[in-house]
Amino acid sequence: MIKRIYDLKQLIRPNKVLVIYGPRQVGKTTLLNSFLSMCSMKYRLDSGDNIRVQQILSSGDFNLILDYASGYELLAIDEAQQIPRVGTGLKIIVDHIPNIMVIATGSSSFDLSGAIGEPLTGRKKTITLYPVSQQELALMYNRYELKERLEDFLVFGSYPEVVTAESRKEKIDILEELVSSYLLKDVIALERVKGPKVLLDLLKLLAFQAGSQVSLHELASQVRLDVKTVGRYLDIFEKAFVIKRIGGFSRNLRKEVVTKAKYYFLDNGIRNAVISQFNPIESRNDTGILWENFIVIERIKKCAYQGIYGSFYYWRTYDGQEIDMVEERDGRLFGYELKWSERKKRKAPADWKGTYDNAEFTIINRDNYLDFIL
Image (cartoon, rainbow, N blue to C red):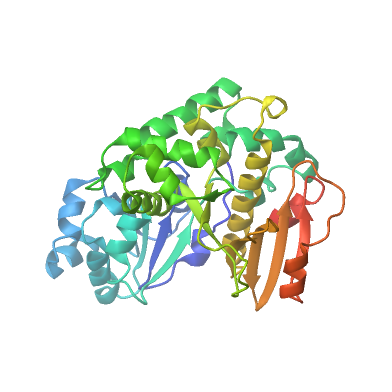
């Protein structure tokens, strides 16, 4: 069993709700059940898929809700996004049952955050569980072993079932099932989404452009939708933990590009499954895309898990100077160029150093990447 980064025992608090977000099939239920199996508190575990639980927690009936939760030290609700107005029901519980602790998991942040956010202001702590990080895998493998498996992570990603699968065929089967059955489940459930084909077409276009600047107008033209609809779908994909948007960085240098964003997939395996490309690295022409996607997402995981607070951007000028990834944290700028094959030293772009005197610049390659993401 893969040991995850979060220790729920250290995160739960009396009269607070611990909200665990994350993609479907990423291990939220396993994390919760693992914690409960060693929990000494008297707890109640329910699922948001249970119609009776939905009726109770969405009822707004104080007596019914308090009767449901009374007598327990811990209440755990898995798949809480299925419960209408779940935040209001949980607020009643944490406000009126002394010292009770509550955990709620959800795969769909646009749904769950909307239902939980405002009612539980000041009453919740939110964490995101990603596909298995290199930090978590470093608890199982040493650095040499992680590097030995690098190409596997670039092609198949790191969903828990994929990491533990024993054969290439099994990994591919799992990823194809994730894309066909789970990836778009939350998205398609929304009203005004036209259907899976147009969504997959849009995702395929993003997969080929991962790490590149994306024009919404070009996407709209290719999938025959209006620009507003494409923008709304991309926003939904991000809130459903399929992709991650990175905007352009600028402090008003006129030649800096900020109108377009880059999009990365939250998992390389999902990206490759969307375009049905599982060829080994040596026979691919998109290794640079896979490398950049992998490093950006692993860095985001590291910052989330280690409490490194900052903002992520890319940087590019109209005359072609660029930096793949920029972090702004603690009032400082850190530029990172992500290179799969380049090992020679490169200087920072002239306008980067000229405009931002104290900004740093580092090449991240196969020699030093583990220092960057562990």
